[in-house]
Length: 296
Picture 1 (cartoon, rainbow, N blue to C red):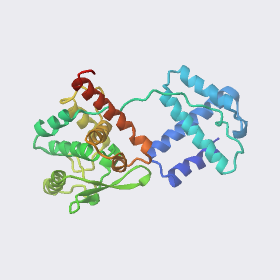
Picture 2 (picture 1 turned 180 degrees about the horizontal axis):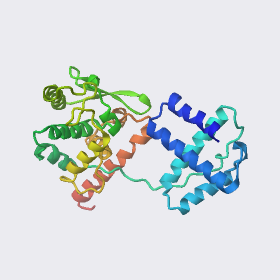
Picture 3 (picture 1 turned 180 degrees about the vertical axis):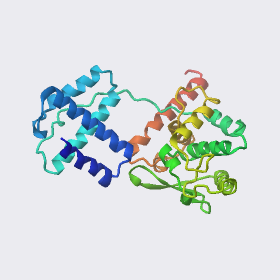
Picture 4 (picture 1 turned 90 degrees about the vertical axis):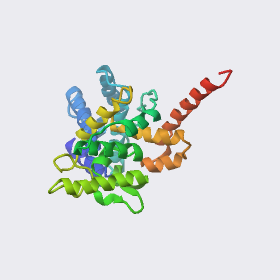
């Protein structure tokens, strides 16, 4: 199956321009599926794999305790793979056509309450050393722009337009989007850039954020910093950079922002991905109603 998998991986990498992490996930799913087929049913050609064999694999995953969400991801991988096989003429029929994805319960995005973000940025002592300066800026960028972790660590100094107060962010699929920033955040970035040049002999000039060695910041550092500071202002279970992305979107929606505008700011491909934040807004309205209406 290697001769069939590799062209698909190349398609994801060079035509769809998916991230390295996403491409690796697709590859791992396909290798696991074909290993299951080989171990249980012998060497079968691509055209010999039926929908019943696919269901057998999915059932084995369920028995292993995988969640419906994880199983759906693997179904999505197989559907994409066989769709590619049809498009390239390798197959005339996909075994995935009769396969139905299991239903999953919708999870509302976890976010930080506005009073807690105000505590974080107005009353938290980050310190005057380089780590403190970096921690405050990375938290400000995540919360005030809604950018993803990968977008943050790969944000280049040249993508900051201080004159227009905007950031050019390179998102999923190498799609660019422009995010406006506040005058305060623009000034914070300018001061950080000035300190970077004065505090280090040979700092990394390509990327905006650097560690105390002057080299590009890495993802684990951001995770640790976010977890550390969110742990001091909120009791929510999950404390990650993506939670601040959810917080950015939820606070915008709760303040009356247009759904399409939030979609553009987040870099979502469709409104469906953004609409989940309207549920948080509805929950907020329900809470207000319960507290304020005499008959609630």
